[in-house]
Image 1 (cartoon, helix red, strand yellow):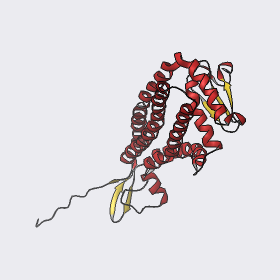
Image 2 (cartoon, rainbow, N blue to C red; image 1 turned 90 degrees about the horizontal axis):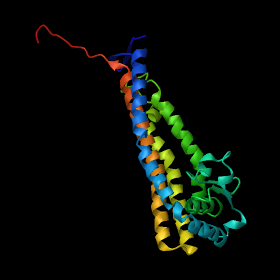
Image 3 (tube, one colour; image 1 turned 90 degrees about the vertical axis):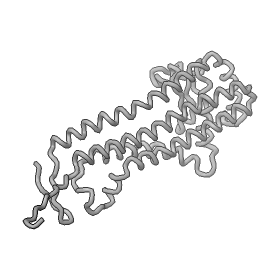
Length: 263
């Protein structure tokens, strides 16, 4: 129901349910369009992942060599995902690889994408041997995604107060939810970058030839762009949602035209 409210001596008209739902509809379209940009970096990474599959036997040999040289073989195991399609479908198909901290396991298809394993060993090093708080970046991953999800919730809330009304902590969060989303995801981007750096370093130390380590760098940069791209686009998506919901749900100031007999 539309009604009048007063703040700082000004009169405002509250917004109707129809206006709110229109805003929500447009915000959803804008958010989806922004996040669609992530497919560009994802496709580029997948193409690079497939490109190096012909060299898999070489990468696999040096992957196991790196595991032993680094001493990680004493606590970390490599699990061939091609035999676990029911548990790890993406990994079994050679589309992804992962490190599981609780089990100290690197899960990947060793017949296809052993080149992804060096990066996963970097994650293992971050988890088991890191200094200067790198392991805490890894632990912040779940919290970062949770905060980003909460900010999406704040973005779609209707605005019950005019923009010039007195602000409280919730208002501050609503006003900055896009920035908070981006910042919450940055620790994950940083930890991924460190894992890639350490993975390439392990590959070089094992004796993997320069052309292959160069290709690893290229692959990992494209992988990192998917994380960085997600952080940037998620922040932009939440920001756009908030701006649209502001426009369609905040009480609208009623402008009065004054007339004077002597004006």
